[in-house]
Image: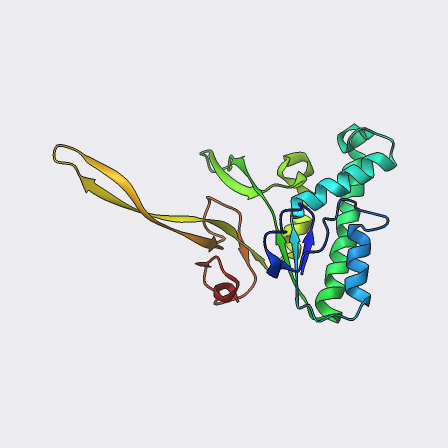
Amino acid sequence: IFMNLEGRLARIPEANAGPRISAYDGQDSVKTFLQELITSDHKFTTLVVDSADYLEDLMSSYIARSAQKDSIESIPYGQGYGILMEEWRSILEAFEILRIQRNMHIVLLCHAMIKTNSPATGGTYDYYAPKLYGGKDKFKGRSDLLKGYCDVIGFANNEDVVNTVDYGFSKKSQAVNSSRKLFMDPANPAYEAGLSFKGMPTECDFTWDAFS
């Protein structure tokens, strides 16, 4: 079953996505959706959150309204981000109940953003990271909280096959094939990744059958 936060799942009937959830708290909200999954009689074995960054946006808007501010950034002294971390903890606790008591897998989808890393050993490079408030260095703990909860952190991208084509006096590179892959190599500096399971491959086709 999908937590339909972005409202783009209507074209995928197999997703078991109900109406779009556009509130964090109150009636027909994220919290009531999770509570119903915890307490109701169902046979779902996997919850897919689409998406974690959109969920964080709903949390942030809820926190700002509760504080009578225009945005979470407007809450003095960065206190809004501390509240955001507590809200994430409550969501992760609900996920744990689903995982342990209801034997469900939890899959968090998240958009990516480009960050810059400047290691102490020298050199600067860009890499892909989850699009969360933790992407802002001063609020890094929020992103680390969510990533620390996950057993697997993967980066989905196309793997292109490029051939060199000879045009007589010149040669040009030409893409001839592209396949969707899930990359999970923690040692690759191009993206954030993580694996808690020993012996698991560091990449696979971007399908549930290949991953599981």
